[in-house]
Length: 134
Image 1 (spheres, helix red, strand yellow):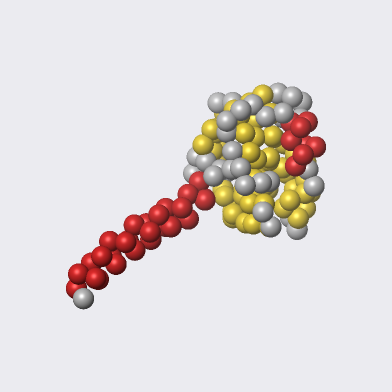
Image 2: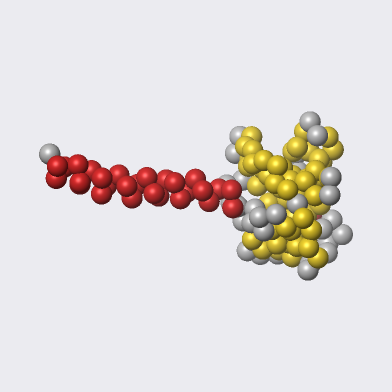
């Protein structure tokens, strides 16, 4: 019986750790370096840390207010200098995102698109706007 408990422990502990690790990484989807493009077709680099965002070398404080889901869409509500923004991950690929400034505090998913964002390749604002705008 004691041997069975040890075997069960050795099997369940790694499974638990994998699940715990997977859950912990979801909040880090926003952090890191992003290639981005503005509506004026200007390519920029955005870098999100825990409480700072760097835009082409200029650093700004920001506050992550929440991470929410609506259907398959995950979005981060952030605040910078009293203004609200939403970073939307429109599909399951967490290397693709758009940043908007919501029209209203009651609707975080509709607003002016500020940046097309991609962690791997330079995004095209026009293409992202057509594909991901609601």
